Length: 47
Image (cartoon, rainbow, N blue to C red):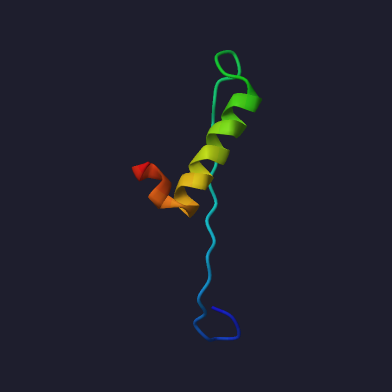
């Protein structure tokens, strides 16, 4: 809501917790990037 009015928007937050003894941060970041691309373009899941 903005100024007491309903508004349309696109917003999502996602976080990922990982054990750095098992996985490094770069691999976790790549996973989140891939997940973002699939959420923004779900038709790519059908390829």
